[in-house]
Image (cartoon, rainbow, N blue to C red):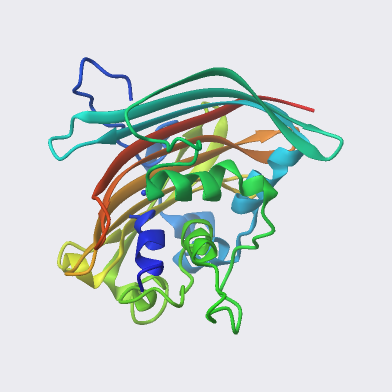
Length: 307
């Protein structure tokens, strides 16, 4: 339990400052999509189960992060941490040129600045939130993780809690075993949880040109906060091939052991026929026993992909 709660606290996953006060980034559900209108999906020969099946079966969203190994790219990473009055305690900026040479990743810092206490003297993250974020996203292309339902036997003492978190982010809707009080609440499309949510459908344009569907799963107002973990899951589908191009998730839960309130937005782009990460925004607070409350926001932009 002591090891698990801080790990899950990451999910429990918020930029330009003026003096010591800063307005947190507030990840919206795919800001770069312009919605045309709500749609009657039956007129498109679709139904809710088509979208649900696509979300549950998808592996391409995570594969986009592993596709980075085939490209050079530039990443700009901004991190802010806050105190109880929402004033900035620490901030970090990195502009990094990534390349993959002779099968090995190489990173060249083009710009780097820190203030506050985000990192220890050995360069490792001071906050568990930062450590987990770095593991799941920054180093995703080095991982052998395959998202999907937890395999039989994966709950043993050697189970990776980090991979449980990846499953929740990259394969939402599956039951993630081994999370106290929460495992049964992650299976939002299961028969026990489906009645807790509304489904909404819309169509629009992503990046000004790509026709997309937006599928939103939203907690019903009548459902108590702690009856669910996922308040909203929004997925953006390319209308032409049903590829997932974006995902927004709103997570919130609290009890006597821990609490969290997190919003995260992940967007992909299609480069040379492959999906690649374009932007990740996150803001969140989490609190677990024996750890300082962590309040943080992130903005990661990846661009200039080249072979």
